[in-house]
Image 1 (cartoon, one colour):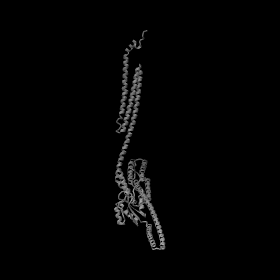
Image 2 (spheres, one colour; image 1 turned 90 degrees about the horizontal axis):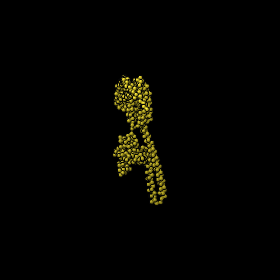
Image 3 (spheres, helix red, strand yellow; image 1 turned 135 degrees about the vertical axis):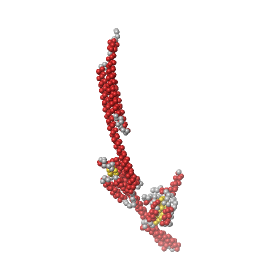
Image 4 (cartoon, one colour; image 1 turned 90 degrees about the vertical axis):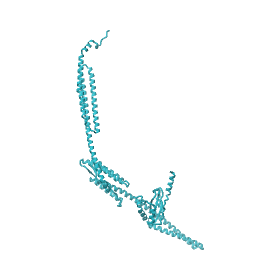
Length: 514
């Protein structure tokens, strides 16, 4: 069987192809020119206009870092959108060219090309609109940032100028005026109750000042009234909160510090709120400082009253102990006196009934001895009665405690005890690590007067200058001895060297352990 020749190998088909080459060349040339024309008209023009539109925004943003970043980001996004659109259009056109090659009908190919171009134009138009929206938003943000920066710069310059003004004012006036207005005087012997009433009066003055609108003032009336009122309330709350803390915790060791802090708070808050055109008045500051001093004085006087009450209670307890000791001593003397008198009565009976001279002599000597003892008891009884009637009689003691307070520190005190060492033993209790050493015991018919004289003479050497009832003095013992011998009693015996037995033994033990 003869093999069948395929169509494309048929002589007639080959002849048609050879005769039709001018037509195919014409069609290919026409399509190429058409594509070049449409490309130059659409793609190159669009790209040029696109980049011209984008370039006009490149010089808009200023040197502000944040605005430059936003605009750069917007340009990049627009470039990316345009590039993506171009790539998609090229892809569509490429796909269209491939489809045209498959079609023998030139009209069909032209329709496909036109559709592809329309799609590309639509994509580019959407990209253009999106890029313009991004840049419009970017410009709005940029202008808003520039406006905010400008306003902030204006406020900063205003604050700097006001700060300079306030510093100049404070430098000129605060050191003089405030110091004069904040002195504390304790020479008027005022009581804590009176000071409490003073604080109440100051509190009323402060409330009236606030109610009258004189606690804060406006430095400008250009802004809104309600806004100024709102900021004034904030300023007062801040100032009151800060000063209330200082007033609540003021004590002797921090009053000067708190006075300065209140003044600094006044300056700081006025500087911070100057942007809102409100200031704390000097009248309110003066009231706060006056309240601080009154509060400090109140707590000081209250503590002094407590110490005085404590001292009075201790004095009453001491008086009770003295009275008890005197009564015990008096009862003892009476008991011994009665006992001796009864012995004398018995011996008198023995003497009367005695028959020998030796016995009589023996009883007579015993009676005389008992009568001498009765006389001594009567003398002691008289001394006790004098002590009962004379409540100022007693002993002034000079004692030291080297282990607790060091060298040349002496306590000068007074006791009305019949046995003054009992009082010194009480002072050597658990409150100090070592017992006191006694340098002198001075009996005086007016012991409080003698004690007061010694205290006044050595007042400048007083250890505790706030609480004089502590009675400790940093002074040389020779000075005390010379004063006592010269002014009061030259027969008083002084022990110059403190034994300090436990203290010295402690030092010895520490040296062995080292």
